[in-house]
Image 1 (cartoon, rainbow, N blue to C red):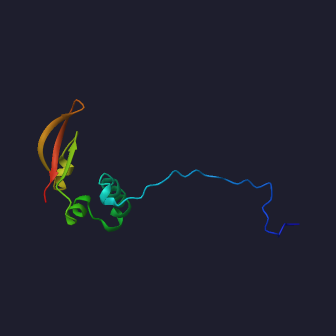
Image 2 (cartoon, rainbow, N blue to C red):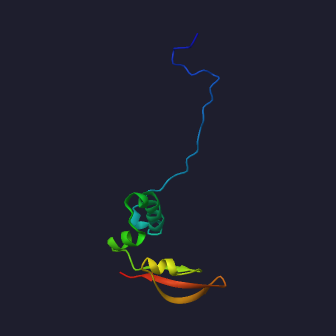
Image 3 (cartoon, rainbow, N blue to C red):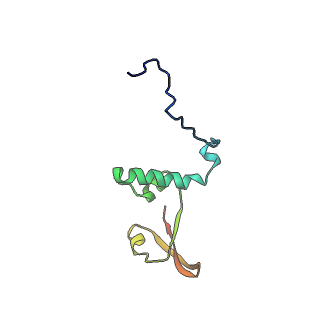
Length: 101
Protein backbone atom coordinates (compact mmCIF):
# COMPACT_ATOMS: atom_id res chain seq x y z
CA UNK A 1 0.00 0.00 0.00
CA UNK A 2 1.31 3.48 -0.86
CA UNK A 3 2.33 5.97 1.81
CA UNK A 4 -0.03 8.96 1.60
CA UNK A 5 1.40 10.83 4.59
CA UNK A 6 3.57 13.08 2.43
CA UNK A 7 6.81 11.82 3.97
CA UNK A 8 9.74 11.18 1.63
CA UNK A 9 10.80 7.58 1.66
CA UNK A 10 14.37 6.77 2.62
CA UNK A 11 14.95 5.08 -0.74
CA UNK A 12 14.77 8.38 -2.66
CA UNK A 13 17.99 10.31 -3.04
CA UNK A 14 18.22 14.06 -2.83
CA UNK A 15 20.26 15.73 -5.54
CA UNK A 16 22.25 18.77 -4.59
CA UNK A 17 23.75 21.11 -7.14
CA UNK A 18 26.43 23.70 -6.67
CA UNK A 19 25.59 26.98 -8.37
CA UNK A 20 28.53 29.37 -8.54
CA UNK A 21 27.84 32.97 -7.55
CA UNK A 22 26.57 35.19 -10.35
CA UNK A 23 27.25 38.84 -10.96
CA UNK A 24 24.49 40.69 -12.76
CA UNK A 25 25.62 43.87 -14.49
CA UNK A 26 24.14 46.29 -17.01
CA UNK A 27 25.08 45.39 -20.58
CA UNK A 28 26.60 48.86 -20.97
CA UNK A 29 29.25 47.79 -18.44
CA UNK A 30 30.20 44.69 -20.46
CA UNK A 31 30.59 45.82 -24.09
CA UNK A 32 32.54 42.64 -24.95
CA UNK A 33 29.31 40.67 -24.51
CA UNK A 34 27.45 42.59 -27.22
CA UNK A 35 28.98 40.62 -30.10
CA UNK A 36 28.04 37.29 -28.49
CA UNK A 37 24.50 38.44 -27.74
CA UNK A 38 24.09 39.79 -31.27
CA UNK A 39 25.21 36.45 -32.71
CA UNK A 40 22.77 34.54 -30.49
CA UNK A 41 19.95 36.86 -31.49
CA UNK A 42 20.83 36.59 -35.19
CA UNK A 43 21.16 32.77 -35.04
CA UNK A 44 17.71 32.50 -33.44
CA UNK A 45 15.77 35.07 -35.47
CA UNK A 46 17.42 35.49 -38.89
CA UNK A 47 15.49 32.62 -40.45
CA UNK A 48 12.28 34.12 -39.07
CA UNK A 49 12.62 37.69 -40.32
CA UNK A 50 15.30 37.37 -43.03
CA UNK A 51 17.28 40.48 -42.05
CA UNK A 52 21.05 40.38 -42.54
CA UNK A 53 23.55 41.14 -39.79
CA UNK A 54 24.60 44.21 -41.76
CA UNK A 55 21.03 45.54 -41.97
CA UNK A 56 20.40 44.96 -38.26
CA UNK A 57 23.68 46.65 -37.26
CA UNK A 58 23.30 49.63 -39.55
CA UNK A 59 19.64 50.20 -38.65
CA UNK A 60 20.71 50.46 -35.00
CA UNK A 61 23.58 52.84 -35.69
CA UNK A 62 26.28 50.21 -35.10
CA UNK A 63 29.18 50.62 -37.43
CA UNK A 64 31.31 50.75 -39.31
CA UNK A 65 31.55 46.99 -39.70
CA UNK A 66 34.82 45.25 -40.59
CA UNK A 67 35.84 41.69 -41.38
CA UNK A 68 38.83 39.77 -42.64
CA UNK A 69 38.90 36.62 -44.71
CA UNK A 70 41.70 34.30 -45.76
CA UNK A 71 39.65 33.15 -48.75
CA UNK A 72 37.67 34.60 -51.60
CA UNK A 73 35.97 37.95 -51.11
CA UNK A 74 33.42 37.31 -53.87
CA UNK A 75 30.51 36.37 -51.59
CA UNK A 76 31.13 39.35 -49.30
CA UNK A 77 31.39 41.73 -52.25
CA UNK A 78 28.08 40.39 -53.55
CA UNK A 79 26.57 41.30 -50.15
CA UNK A 80 27.94 44.87 -50.34
CA UNK A 81 31.26 44.53 -48.48
CA UNK A 82 34.24 46.46 -49.88
CA UNK A 83 37.85 45.25 -49.77
CA UNK A 84 40.19 48.00 -48.58
CA UNK A 85 43.48 46.29 -47.67
CA UNK A 86 45.51 43.10 -47.62
CA UNK A 87 47.55 41.86 -44.68
CA UNK A 88 49.14 38.76 -43.18
CA UNK A 89 47.68 36.97 -40.17
CA UNK A 90 49.30 33.84 -38.69
CA UNK A 91 51.53 33.64 -41.78
CA UNK A 92 48.48 33.59 -44.08
CA UNK A 93 47.42 36.31 -46.50
CA UNK A 94 44.07 37.87 -45.65
CA UNK A 95 41.80 40.55 -47.13
CA UNK A 96 40.34 43.29 -44.95
CA UNK A 97 36.84 44.48 -45.79
CA UNK A 98 34.31 47.00 -44.50
CA UNK A 99 30.58 47.42 -44.91
CA UNK A 100 29.70 50.98 -45.90
CA UNK A 101 27.15 52.97 -43.91
